[in-house]
Image (cartoon, rainbow, N blue to C red; front, top):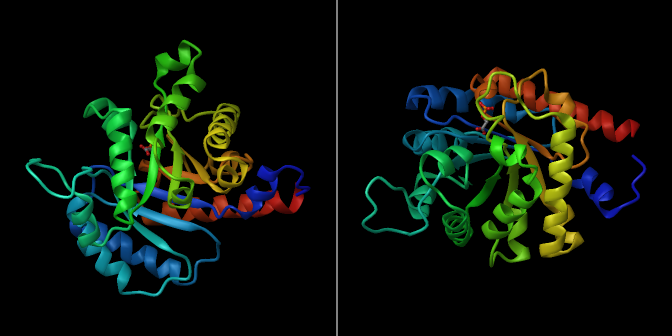
Length: 279
Ligand code: PGA
């Protein structure tokens, strides 16, 4: 690749990140078996990438035991899908960052579209959660994404700037290395075949990166990974892997079988390596 801008130089250096959230799926036994098989693959994985699995809360501690039991060539992060920002207290049904660490998680997903729309999370609670997670040494997948009507009104970039700026309010530049930004448009999540086009993703990712440049400067912004999620399939992987501002994928349904997740990871990394060789 002929690198001319700081972002192009950093593109080659940003290690791909590929994660899967299982949402409200899998028993403890199913989650452990998935983790066991993934860890076996990761022992000799032929890729350079960061991998993350995000089981339901009930499986975290047992999956942590499975992952801690093996030595993997590439890191496999264990993430939760949500958390409260307080350490403890009268918050019936909630889980705290202290509990996540205790269960063995080192990552947490914050601000998923389903949490925002079905459970009333706001940009402000997302900011509370993000800062609390960082205080507890949890890495963060920060999800941003617009719904269909925001896109119809033509204000996607304004909307995403607000989501990103409020989420990162009072978050120092030094914390960015612990944050992966996931662009997950609500209209693409869980849909039958309407994942975002390469052009849509490329435009949004460039915008998110320039918002980060405005907040933190070029160096930090170009070191931060921005990944895409929303109806990603094995077949669609190479489309995204060749977009210069797409540093990985956050996958739901298509990665709920471990063999499919491995295929997605390998396909992304192969396409990315090919891009760097030929571009
Ligand atoms: P999906 O979910 O891949 O099943 O659309 C993506 C997500 O919600 O992160």
